[in-house]
Length: 225
Image (cartoon, rainbow, N blue to C red; front, side, top):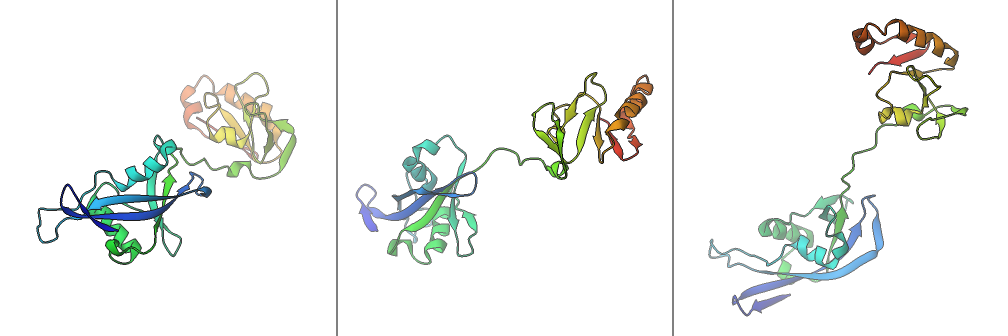
C-alpha cells in the first residue's frame, strides 16, 4: 500500500506479510502463522543522495510480533518454488527491498497478496558426533559404566581402571573417559583383556611408548590417547 508520509512528505510503502516460525529442528510450527505489516519511506530515485529507509529493519519488525524469540538466534527466510530456504538480508534496506522485489515478482507498491516469509531458529549446538561405532550386535550382558545403556556395536574397555570399566561407542566418542587408555573390541575377544592389560603394564615405565604407539592384538585395537 502506497501513502504519503506526513512528516517527510515522501511516499511511504506498507507491505503485508504472512509469517511463520521454523524451529531449530527444521519443522514449521503450524500454529505460529501471523500477519504483519512493515513500512518504509521510498527514496526519490532522481536524487542519488536520497535513499529509501525504515525506522526498523524487517527482522526487528518480525521479532516484535514474536517477542518470545528475541533472545534466540534467528534469521528471516523465504521458501522458493524449489523448497529452498533463502535468507533475506535485513541489515541493509536496499538489499532487503531488492530481495522482496524478487520474491513479489514485481513492484512492491503494487502488492496484491501477502509476502510469505518465515523466522527460522538457528541451532547454535554442534552437530552430534558420528555414532557408527554403536552399530552392530547388541551385548545384552554389558552396560556402559557411564550412561548405563546396553552396549551395541563395539565394546570399549579401560586398561587402567582396577575395576571392570566398560564404555559404549557413544561415550567413548564423546571423550568421557579420555584420562585413561581404552581398548576397542572389534569381535568377541573380551578374554584377551587381561593380556592387553599386561602389555600396557609392561610399557608403563616408558610413558612415551604408551602415548605414541598403537598396539594391535588379535582383533582388538588399543586406542592410545
